[in-house]
Image (cartoon, rainbow, N blue to C red):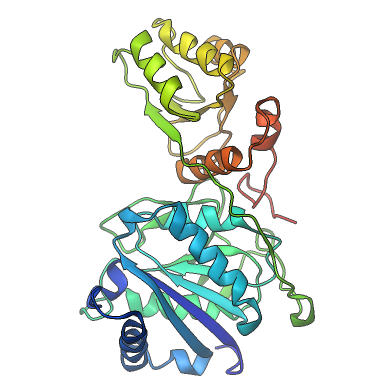
Length: 345
């Protein structure tokens, strides 16, 4: 266990972890009720760190939106000098999206920001919540300066994680990388991937950039399912950016010429169109096959090896920051938060 003089901020947003909380309670009573529940059910937390808790909201994570991402990033930024690390309790369904958003909003982190939750409520038998929150709080005292997801004793980079199961306690996986570490008898760190600990004297505030535009649309390509010119007109008139999840390394069925017309129309309107894959692993390579090359020639760009969660949020961030259309390829090929696999600097 870490030093007792460490201070950890816990921000609660809802989800399965504390389903017994009454969302109609006043905020201060929610804080007190939840802190009391943690102290009773997980008394070990006080042996790890001094805990400061705040209930940001108490919602099903399917209702998470950009406003909550901005609120969390702002809360972390404004309370920066009061803690050594931050833990966010979050519903599992959209945890990977929130982790990606915070990774982009909080650049140059010098302290840990850890997201966790549970598949079963804290108050139930066989709950995973207790072990998850203990691991997350200990990780928050470690000094490793990243946005991370800590779940079922495994630690993932926030910009690489994806939810893979609604049934198993081992609910998450890294999209294209090994985990950053795991909790066993000791906390085992993958030092080739995890950023090194920052000395306390150097733990300055991160840069905060909350600009984001969620006006994107994600399409899954299905064999034989039509894409019509009428649909293209509606999509390009209503949205600012697109992700198309094709097959393999990014192939679309060009027997239907409308997919090429979609890429041409998006480019003509200055709307970024990103090609992703329905495969769980692998990298988009639009140069591998003729179909991919045809899309690239018409302005489509590669989503590389990013998870859908990270890719979606990064596209929203690009739109929010008003990155010029001509710089769209450079933006997606530049790793902002380790989303492309390397250790971020």
